[in-house]
Amino acid sequence: MFGWMKRRSLVFTSSIMISLLLLVLVGIMTSLMYNAERGAAYDEFEQVGFKLKEQAQANNNLISVTGAAIEAGREAPANEMLILKKLLDKMTDDDLITNAYYITPEIIEKDGKTYLRNLQISESLIKAGSAPGEDIETIGALLKGFEQAKKDNNGLTAVYEDRFGKWITYMAQIKGEDGKTAAVFGLDFNYGKVEANMNKMLWKTIGIGIVIDLIGIALIVLLTRAVLKPLRVLAVTAKEAAQGNLTVHVPVTSSNEIGQAASSFNEMIASLRKLTIQIERTSREVAESSGSLKDAASQTASATHEITDAIQHVASGSETQLISSQECQRAMTEMVVGIQRIADSATVVSDLASDTSVLAENGGVIIDRTIRQMMTIEEHVHNAADAMSELNQSNVRIEDILSHISEVANQTNLLALNASIEAARAGEHGKGFGVVAQEIRKLAERSKESSDEITSILHTIGERSREVASSLTSTTEEAQVGTKLAGETGESFRAILDSVKQVSEQVQEVSAASEQMSAGSEQIAASLDELERMAEGSASHSQEVAAASEEQLASVEEVVGASEQLRSLATELRAAVGRFKV
Image 1 (tube, rainbow, N blue to C red):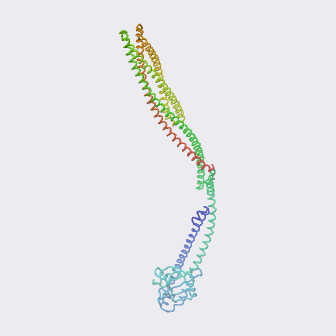
Image 2 (image 1 turned 60 degrees about the horizontal axis):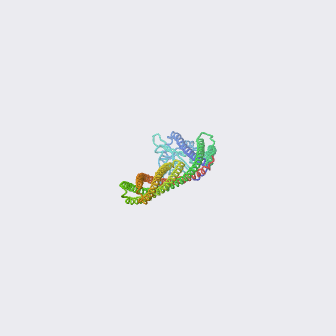
Image 3 (image 1 turned 90 degrees about the vertical axis):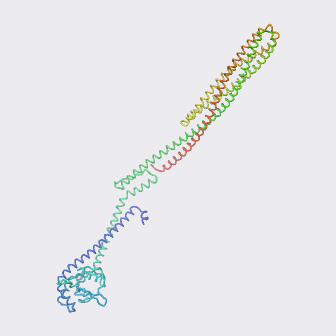
């Protein structure tokens, strides 16, 4: 039932509930009124009985005389009986008291039955077939009423029925002049008529209650409809708002709870409208921002790709530079060995020149020995010339290597510059790459400076080597000429001695130049060692930068994915908010 009522309108449900309450209230009031009427009837029975009992008590002497005669089995005095009958007849009527009588105070038991003996009765009982002095079989309520009257002086019986109708009997003791019970006075109230009157009144009351209930229901329905009309408007408006229309407004016509609810609903709709607008604006901004973020992340990813490629080139160039530095170092080691040989040869030549000078000063007797020495000198000078030729070739090779190193340094510097530019484009994420690229550029500049310095030194060594080679060539030619003319140069011995002195001086110069070349070669070797270490550091840093670039690329790709997901969510949010009309 309650489920059925929940599916009905609030007006219908409220009307039904209030109508039921009114019906229950009318029923309760009717029941109370009926019980009150019955109580009033009982009170009236007792009051009337008490008053009539007082009248009967006033004739107790007559009652005592007639009672004594009847108890003795004699005929009661006619005059006293007549007076008592008239008195009882006056007490009866057609509406309330049907019968009035006196009963002897003793209960008679015979044949296993209980009897009460009439002392005098009213005309109505005579008409019903009873007579004075007659024993009346008594059971139930009447007997209990008789016993209660003897015990409490008076009392009302419960409702009982016989073939004549429904009755309630009032009974009271009539005391004689001696104070003893002379008789029991009885009044039969026609409870059937009283009950009929009460039922008539009950139905009348019920009819009036139903009419009042119907009028009340009609008024309640009208009032409920009037009171709940704003709620119906609120419900319709709320349903429209639930369908997405947030432009609705409920008119507030009162300040009661419904008016307050309507006002609160309007405030809620306004708040929802503002919230929806804000969500739509925010979702649009988020979508735009996520798109910008995705573009920026894509650009960053592209820049990171380029930086990674550049770093890979730098790393490859660094490895190439490292290999070239190692080869240059090996070449310089060979050149140092060659220069050392030149220095050793120059020392030998210097010693031989000194010996030759001594021998020349000692005389021409040892000219043959001089000739042999000249041959030896020629041979050594030839070897020195070959060594100087090899030195020149090594210088050329070193210059080529240094030129390659300079090109690698320039390429490294260019790659570092490109990496710095890409790092600057990457912004905050590219600061680390910018620092590393700056260090690589510095290393490349230092490599180029060292290469230029080595080139300058090798250029000087080349010039000196060419001078020595030229001198050795001249010496070789002169030694050959001296060998050929040794036999004929007795007279020209001084010229030979002077030539030997010149050769000694040049050999000393060659020795000094060789020492200088050896020192320069050692410096070049040290520079090449430093360049190799720098190349190794540059290669290591390049590998680290490449790894960091790959990690940054992965992070940027994750940012691209996250921005795409954010843009998708923002689009879904805008679609969800778009169904609301603001």
